[in-house]
Amino acid sequence: MRLGAGPPVRRADAAAQDDVRRANLSAVLRLLHFHGPATRSDLVASTGFNRSTVGSLTSELVKLGLVRERPGVVSGKGRPSNVVEPVSTSVHVLAFDVTPSSVGAARVGLGGYMLQVRRRLHSTSPHDVPAVVDLIATLAREMQAKSVPGSVCLGLVVSVPGSVRQPDGMVRRSPPLGWHEVPFAEMLGEAVGHEYPVAVGNDGDLGVVAEYLRGAARGKQDVLYVRGEVGVGGGVVVDGELLKGAGGYAGEVGHIVVKPGGRVCSCGARGCWEAEVGDAAIIRAVGRDPRESDIEDVLNDVAVGNRRSIAGVRKTGEWVGLGLASLVNLFNPHVVVLGGSLGALYPTMEPTLAASYSRALGPIREQALLVRSDLGSDAQLVGAAEVAFADVLEDPAGTLGGRSDQEPELLSGT
Image (cartoon, one colour):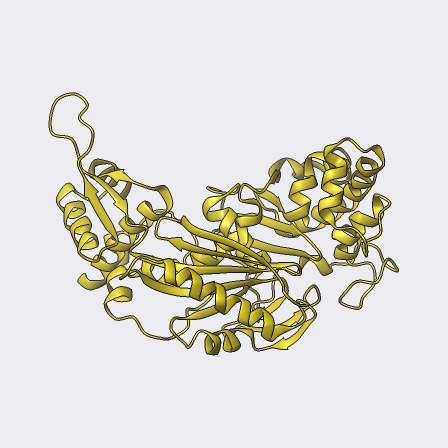
């Protein structure tokens, strides 16, 4: 999957005429998908194509049903340039985010438009994999029933907090969900009747894809994303491409050891970063019992100015900064994006986090800007949606003209 919405492929990069046409269609559709409506004049300026080429490309995309044109606004002399915009109801994807407490769901149209958003609590324990599969299949059917007749579903992609093998979507290990060696993509495919491609991805990977393409890291080529929740997930973009590793497991940042001999982590080891800064650790730090409280209680306490809670969150911030410093030393990103509970609590923990972060990093801290997620709890849904849109953005005519039932290649390189 080509993550960026960067410069289009130029003529010199394509050997055959068909490749040229496909690359040019892709360039125009990407601009509209990631940046929204644009006049033909804007497209000429952004792509470097001549006016007649842009006119021909937009006409082909109109025939495919992916974009439409409308008259532009008259300003000054001459005829206004037509405005080209993505048709959000022409194709759509189904995106899901599984957490220990609930399943988030969205039907997302071309252009990144959230056409429907749902969140359902688990009816039983999240350890009950068949129940989670059934919940996702039910939500998928409900959202499909609301889609415009004729709209094409490009695929279903699910975010899971755990190690996910690619390309078959086997969840090897998910301590927050209590899953081990679960053939999740296969189970989902059967549950939805193999009506559309199904893929499963790690929550940190999908989060960094979302922030890189549409969130706080937009325009940056090297990004570190860390999501705090029951566990701690992470994802890394290096020079515009997702860092996947040999088996697709890169980015398991929650299991770096920051405190040898520390708390027992859900993975079985001691002193993992997740054990020191995950939701349970934060809840304990503010004097609450994780069996009786959740992270929302901490957020509420902080919001009303509870001094004990603020002090506990700031103490946790020291460990957050220490772990982030190790990761920044390793990956040297332009920007570090904090999501989930870490993003929500960042303004409170910022003084202590910044202090430990700066001490451990030294001068290179200036290169890695710390920011909160722009997308918040929607990050995983946005990232999952972009995975499913990848094929149509890469080859609009080929994808819609000859769609196969093969599963999409999740987060693959260009």
